[in-house]
Length: 210
Length: 210
DNA sequence: GACACCATACCAACCGGTAGGTATTATTCA
DNA sequence: TGAATAATACCTACCGGTTGGTATGGTGTC
Image (cartoon, chains in turn yellow, green, blue, orange):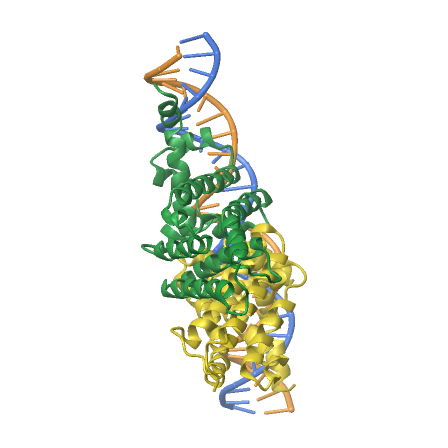
């Protein structure tokens, strides 16, 4: 048996639990999700669950970390990095986020944002794992934004980091309104606004180009 | 006894329950909030609670409606309507939202957004009440945006409604990131970005003024 | 005396977590 | 090599605190 298979085989049910947690919690929220809901979705027993995770909170933290891994792997291998111009890469990221708005809400919305909003005051450890997930993802955009600032000679009182965070604010807010209104189009429209903002920031005529 | 006093007196404990629900749910989330938590915060007994509300879900809907009343009254009497220019009124609204980012997170974040994100798939009636609250508030911005579009002669492929919703997307997303990062400054920065976007939209030189 | 309003005592279901066992695989060492 | 030992990965049955909701009774007011 190879090491890869060993790892896969050894933790197969643990991974299934994490995937199930990811899906069920996004649909029902953290508190309303019962451990047995997750076991049922994962096809494992409660005994198996508590073999891998000591408490429900520990699962939530592991799920947030798993979410970070899954999403960073997904975005790392996506094609939006291919453009030569950094601004084009940033805009392609937003296009990708817009293209991802398909299927059920629970399938494309963000586990970290959902859990953080629910438990920020009651479960600091979960909140921190979620905050790290969102902040870490935002940080992947900073180099492109910084390069775009330099290439386009934009000088203003906002930082590359704050614009990276603004993209996540727009995405998270779009999810909230899509859920509240039970309608995805508001999310798509908001990403259009975000894209327009970034184009205006970098292409406004009054800024001198390098 | 006047009608106003009658209403106040008759439903004093009911109002206290609604206010307590507003505060406790924003801090702990809907599911994790126990009815007795609300009773304790409101200084009433469980018997009183179930005299006024048949179920926990009914309370949540009433709380969302109460939230709509409280917030619309607050914004209706605020000073940002006073500017003569519609764009200035819109910008003053955003300045007000930024100025409101003070104190504890649970004190200034949005009950409707918090609850909607948590129960959108499990409690449709609560979700609809929350959606109505957010959409209704957004709608109050549409006349000023429409007037600004006409006054400034801006013509583009976005509607006044979609920009009104984008303001709420930015606000809700700012709350999510502030909670996740346990840091309000990201919310303030995001409202700065939103303000800058709106200024760029209406003041970009290529659009001809009326 | 009817009704709104509120208090206390209580219940039954739910659910996170535990107890205690078995099957399987890895490791040790004579 | 292979038996002994140990660790991993589960499984079933169950416990006990929590919690939404109820039953019932009391009190002031029109």
